[in-house]
Amino acid sequence: MKKWRMPALFFFFLPTVAVRAAEGPVSFEVFFAQRFSLQENFLNTEGSITSSGSLRYESPYNLRFNKDQKGYSFFLGAGLEAQLSRGLKLKGFLDSGEIKYDKFWYYNPPADCGGGDPRCGWMSNGRDIVEEARATFFVRELFLSQRLGREGEIEWWAGKKRFSAGSGAVIDNYVLGAGGEVDLGETWRLSAAAVFPNGEFYAEGKRSPFVWLEGAWQFSLLEELSFWAAYFHDGDDAVAELLFYGLFDLLLASGYVPEKATSSGDFFWLGAQLQKLFDRWGLTLGGALQFGRADVSITLRSLLGGPLIQREGALEVYAGMAEASAFFDLADWATAGVFFLYLSGQSGARQEVGGHFTSFVGIYPYITRTNVFFSGGMNQNFSARHISSSGVNARGVLAPGLNLGLDITSDLLLRLCGAMLFAQGEHAQSHSRFYGIEGDFNLEWAVASWGRMLLEFDYFYSGDFFDFRKPLDRPDYLRSFTTEPDAWKVIFGFDITF
Figure 1 (cartoon, rainbow, N blue to C red):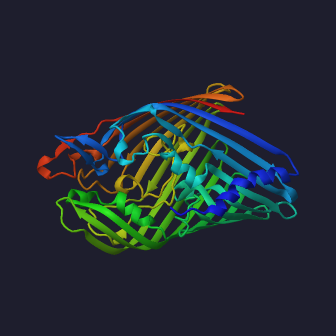
Figure 2 (spheres, rainbow, N blue to C red; figure 1 turned 90 degrees about the vertical axis):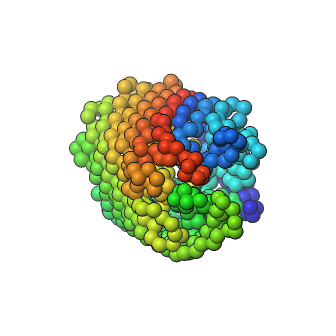
């Protein structure tokens, strides 16, 4: 991969120069987190090497709940904030990502060390640690910002920064770019940003910009009605990646495997969100429409051999999302909540590259409603982001749920969550829309001002969406109906901040 050498060097030396030039206070923070994890029967999204007479690769489209792992991981980070001249501020954060070493982990199915599996050795944020270092220099955030105007009503930023749009369903990632915000009196706010979503110091991904515009009417400090619009240009085969990994379960069952894909296109979002507080409860409502078009080319390989097959088409995306949540203060120490999340999905059997695509596409989505099906839990800040369609095999998500927070003492917090999970579109083989039911338990104990202990237990009851005749990549007479087991995990953690 071609690297941006000069920008990478700039980001490396900027903190040193800034600290020397600082005219105001300079603050530092160091963060160290440890995790001991046990996971059983997780959905195997990488595929695996299985034994059936002889060793062979099994496709992840089979939706096997056969992934077990247990071991130790850690995260090390350091933050800097420096006040420069004329209100200019520098903020940065370097971190290792979640570090795993294969000697401290047990994987079943085992890692494929002969096939370049990143789990064989040191790994950061789900990939080889050397690749993570080359792509990010472990720079998670590093940006300049400044407030201008008589009362600081104008603010701009530039650099690498965590950026979120569309409640995290569209994008929530560490991006490279610039943005700004203008307060028009006490009631109106305008925001804009132009970024490269992947945030890496490679030339790859830099032909795919993302632009965001938002206008908000503010009732109070925590209440507002906002309207937003976003645009993304796919110049790096992003939509092709979705098709490659998310749509061809049916083709696989028919005897074809996607081999290579390319794409180019433009996508738009229009959305709104309302945040309103009442006496002892609050309400959030939001939604978005997505539309766009991409020219896609994909190469297929037959499982029976023969020449490669080339298919091309124009993919037209028409999708949407909606969310609603409310919290209720039952007492000073207890808060209950309800939520509903809808992400549209693909329905029916898809056998062509072009045509309509109705699964809501997130550029780098990051949703934390639950700990297993989504990306919540104590490890949520360590999760790697990537472009994806909604749900499993692009089938979408409908997730009604409940949560409860208890401040048992000022130092001991308990969080409970439960949700039912459905697909909008049925699976092509099981003809079911029921993903399952999830329950989450999170306990946090602040043992000191510098440290806290965490305990998490999550259980996912797998629904019959995942139960069908498997494996898809074998002839029908060699398949058998499989009922997948339930998934669960336990994580113990200890965080230190100073």
